[in-house]
Length: 320
Figure 1 (tube, rainbow, N blue to C red):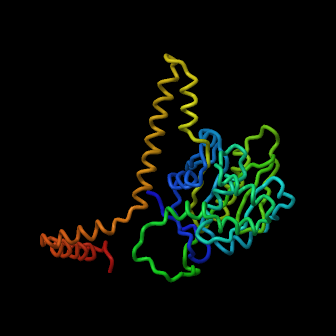
Figure 2 (figure 1 turned 120 degrees about the horizontal axis):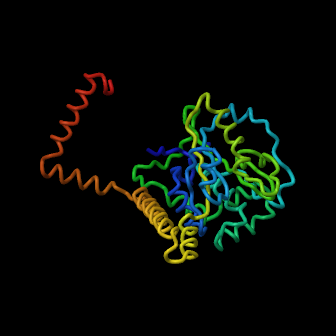
Figure 3 (figure 1 turned 30 degrees about the horizontal axis):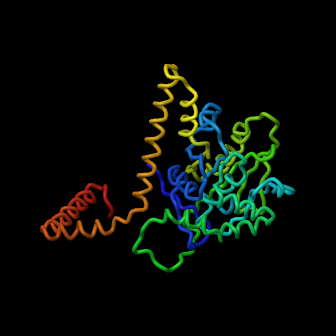
């Protein structure tokens, strides 16, 4: 089962928390106008698993943020990157996932960004990292797409709650190959971290695996919850291109069509799940309770539930 992880670092603002999920992130970037990409969860860093992803524009990594470990990270940040790399400081709370995603999209020459995001990239090109972060926070396009995944909550308080030391805080960072270099982009740092040079023809996914593994090991003594996602070229689009290039009777044609059908089913499932995420079920639940009450079934159901709770408590399996 998927975990709903809060991608927040400080306090709640008008940017909602969203679920770390490939279907959510794929629809999120589509709403920004991006075409031809999707998100896939990565379960292994071995070469075979990474190669199976196809063309990968970048990786985003989710981990439980711990202040002491963050302060111990004394790696120097790069300089002289401004002419070829988009890096923005994180000035928005609750939006580090979206910022990490933008860190990949805006640094890829192969992603079709769409008119609005392309204009944003061009407009912010000469900005420093702090101003780039402010530009993201003021982008109606980005904020609207992000907040479209706000869960309907009629009981949400207008009071802003500040995160405490007891809260679990999760954070996203990005890994991208740009201009023959491999970078780690963390909006909480003053700048990008240069992980190394990429020789011409080198596989950047093989090069980045040790850096990700080292981060996991650094946190693994106190935390085992991590999530790695790849931003890839659309599998469905690639399969359609392959099918169009094959002649009827080709042995590979049936296999490609079957693969496309599976991929389209997955995309349709993602869309259905996103509709359910955004739907407000409260009116349905209220009407259900009314109907049960009218049929004099509500009180017996409540009493039966209470009795089952007592039985579980007596057996040692319920709350005391």
